[in-house]
Length: 63
Image (tube, rainbow, N blue to C red; front, side):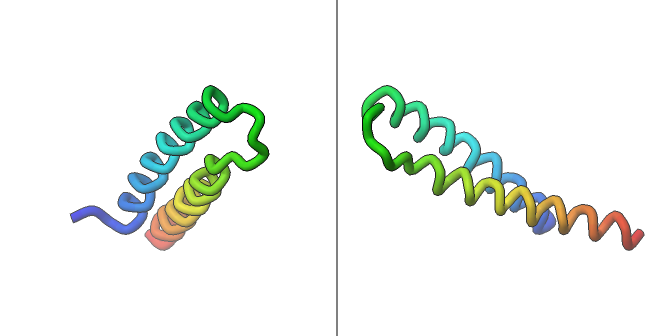
């Protein structure tokens, strides 16, 4: 079974791919729109990676 920080890393990777795809779509199809929804997935990706990093570091410092 995967540890929580592994799951968060996988979620972060999925969000990274989604962020890239959404941003690419936005630039090609709607270049003049002000709202780019890739920011939403990008912020989620940063949160997932940050929490994963803190959990991983915390586990390593204990041992």
